[in-house]
Length: 194
Length: 194
Image (cartoon, rainbow over all chains, first blue to last red; front, top):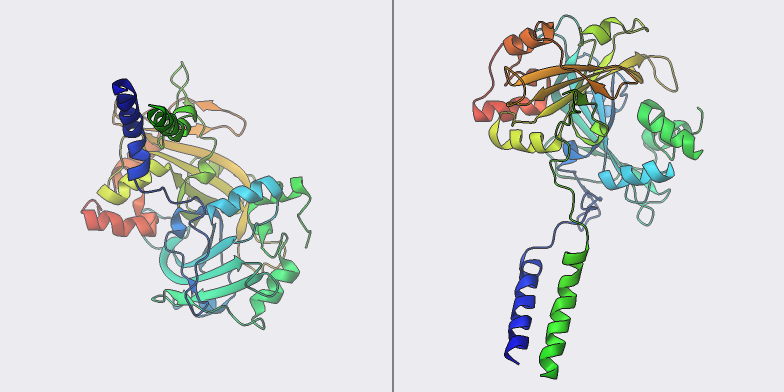
């Protein structure tokens, strides 16, 4: 009997760390989050997501047009990691895929730079979300003011909806501008030539 | 007695998943790896690391000069995640920090692009490593041939050593071209004005 009590005590102690430590965040904690008004929360940690590609002078939306510097902005595109891993396996985006388009000014004067362009201040943040049960047409677009933490989905009349649907090479997204994803999509037969 | 046996059995079963499942890979699995000749293995999964920034026409090394397209290449810089997290807390790079400089051609013809530049084929891969016990001066640079999987450290006479030491804003690296890191370094007092 005494031995059994000890065995129980030891076994319970061995279990204790699992029981007492906080549960680790799920890997899909970077899925879209909304407030009670249905507004999307601006992703806070997107610079830790998977970066897809960057371009220069490629952005034509309101934030790019409002660019105070006049120089062509850089566009940096990130996707939430769980959606990226799913894309690698399937060539399409899963539900809750979230893309951040970060616009930054481009600078050509500074340090040892000899005429190239490097990235400066944040000038805009736009988000595209695939959320099948929430949005008609599955996808929605959002623009975040610099200081804002929530944004409403842009109306369906916004140009991004038709442009992405008509010209996105894969599943409403411009995979054609992310070179490593092009090969993945072509291997899965999901790449649509423009 | 029977109850104690059951308690023991239940407690042991509760523990079983911890004991039987394989141990998770350590978070520092993206540290530099060398072969028996001391050559560095080309990082395989750097596109899943933390992206720091991209520039256009900023690269002046051999790969950029050998660029067959003539157009200014994009440079994309990645750092291993454990080093990034350490930098956020300290403003300097820890031992084993590893940076990948990926050079890609820039294209201006394709899809809906109206004059901007987007990224194309891989044209070069360079790596900078901080490895205090292995390299005199703590840092070493490597160039990987496209098909190569290992590379020797470049000789100390290579221009990258003096350029990074003299002009890198933080700890032998060009943090001045990664806007989000500039603020971190300045907050920690580690940013050196050029």
